[in-house]
Image 1 (cartoon, rainbow, N blue to C red):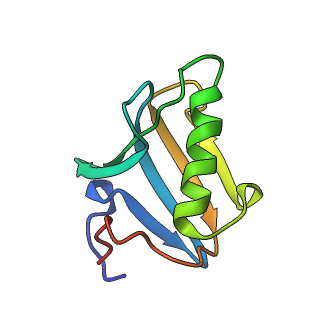
Image 2 (tube, rainbow, N blue to C red):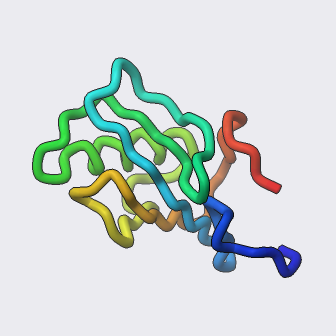
Image 3 (cartoon, rainbow, N blue to C red):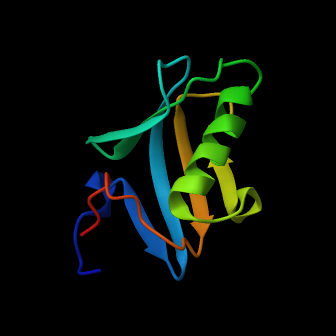
Length: 101
């Protein structure tokens, strides 16, 4: 990546690991990867926000979207918050709904 202001990006590559900043929305009508808002990618899931269960559900949803196992996704912070950072080890695919430069 060229020297750009990384503070405004919702993602960063750390070798083969994709680091994503997420704005989570629990209790949604459907599971969906939404648009980028500032430096976060909006991800909505149907799960209820009880003790990190929505984050666990989101990790499972994103594992399918990126073609990896659940164990390949680390929640860096935000397990019980709407603001999260995830590390996805060696994603096999990138969802079409996300624009990576």
